[in-house]
Length: 310
Image 1 (cartoon, one colour):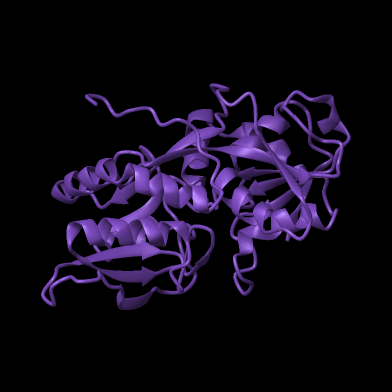
Image 2 (cartoon, rainbow, N blue to C red):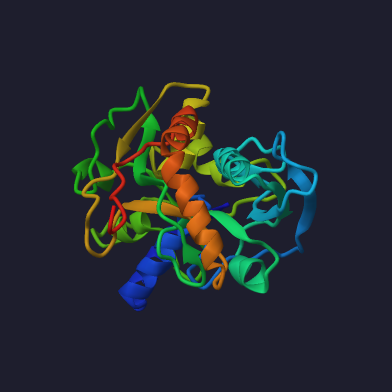
């Protein structure tokens, strides 16, 4: 489960702009805050649920909105429709007067290519705004990576330049063995913090519930002192931990190489411009309700930048 800290030494061998695109797309799974701009994939094929979340009161002949989602990835989505993306998709479908079909597919590399771009799905919730291969709707939330530590640990108000990080045992989310890693992993490596860093695979052990949450459990169990985690994942599982936890936004957040804040949109397959427009109208109209859903899931929210023309 824990990757060798030495993997971080290879981070500089890749083009930084390409790494940023990879890191931004990590946020969509986040868990998230994962995957690469080249796509996400599954070792197994998809499972399909027709009408998995029907629209109450919709006409029997209502059109269907086919949604790609991970069946085991709280707080984002699961097969029981308990994730905040499930709730937001239900809100959108209700507003559009459509019924939902879910295509359940574990988010791994090749996921976008195998689903959206082969017309298996209409929409994919939770993509980093502007990520390649899909059209992005307007952003419906913006979040940040956070430091997560036990409340009883002397690690409050950390920043990336805090000297305490040089001696603390640190956990970071990692995407794979090819050093396509998250912004915090790059940021601390660039500061020479390597030997005390432990990598937790973003995909994790898929036989377990919500595998990306393992990094939070490691903090709870004192296997590591602090973790740098995508905000929605951190907020949800820290709030439900067996001991009091602390979260602080990772700062500086606007490093031009490794930004820590990202806006999140719905991804729509290319060529479906009409659907993008309809979903954008719903997202704008229902922003207050969406904010309430995100707050219920303890998602740390940063101010959204209004789209051009708003």
